[in-house]
Length: 508
Image 1 (tube, helix red, strand yellow):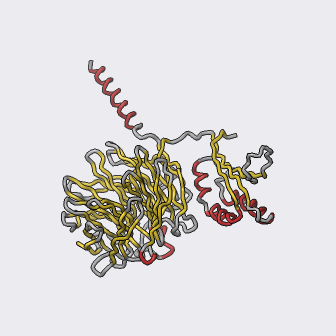
Image 2 (spheres, rainbow, N blue to C red):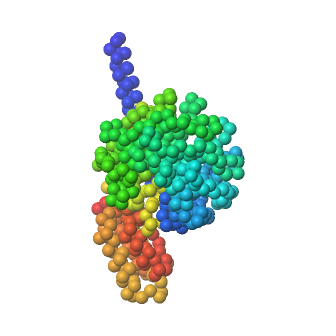
Image 3 (cartoon, one colour):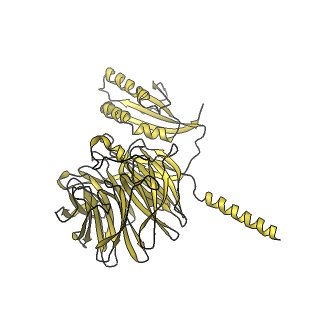
């Protein structure tokens, strides 16, 4: 009888292990759309749902582009909003509802100001307030914003990279104006020098705010009081054993079961070493990784786990970590990287252990510009790049990974040149297209030809280019590669029409 009980228990244990290991479907980001933006680059992306419609706000130098987004991730430009003094870049944008009114708060980094915009019914913006930096506050080179809702009021917490760094709290009035509550100057104990990431947890009726200090290499926890004031709880600096905080950058958090976690990424100072941006150049490079901290009953940060970068992950130069989805026992996160130019999906289980899922090489570096958004049952990521030549924002849908084994991707480009394009211009354009193979190694094969169809259904298109890629990464890298962007800019003026189609087929 005992043997039977042991056998049953063992079977149940094995079944539970199988169920646990299979709880996350192997997910992958798949691009849905990309659109041009008016700014020189994409620094920050946020999104918001208003009246059943979904809007995307893309901030860069000089302005913020507003797009509507449909259930398939398709973007449509709504409007463009200039920033104060046409400065920027827009950083740390956050949209929220304050006592019935929808606002977008924008940190104008080089304008040393916080701009408040009312979100109108069509998603467009109307500036209602401008809060300038003073000797009392820490808004210079403002980068990160965090709205904290308390019982009777809401507050905007602000951090940045100014000469006298620190953390500031402002009460958000019903009209969107900001009233200063408290500022705490950075010192040798707290980590608020270069706040590029913040997150709020509410635990047992208490509100806690967590910050990352990019310049001073650590994370801090604060208790937020009902009146918007705050006090420091604990601080944890970088080391070479159980956390990776040199250049602490993105900060996010999640509750799983009864456990509260803070997840912190970093863009290591070694990536900035050459231009003298780092205040303290005496650092040790000990690799790249994402650090997990558990929150104790007092709201303090406790080092818990590190997912270390290796040859199977893309974690170098993390600039943004977004929560994609949360279940009772696990969360899926997306890590945007500047140096690996990728989106890495990871899973955080209820025990606070991170494990990689899949990554997509986007073909562009992500510089804080990554945002997760949900429409119905679909999870999306919206991404942009700090590259000044790209000027694009892209959407990705998170789907179960599609089996592409033994398949290749065919990318067919059909062109018609303008009637006034000279033969020399056309020949140069053809050679420039073919030369992409030499500049983008992800192109497995390229061939071309002039249309010879006699059916009269070619729509006037005359030239065909057929490119082959072995996977999704190759197409992404090609689409956003500097050489491809330069080619489009060069030959665009002589193109009358273009038709592009992609399809997957069996590999030869």
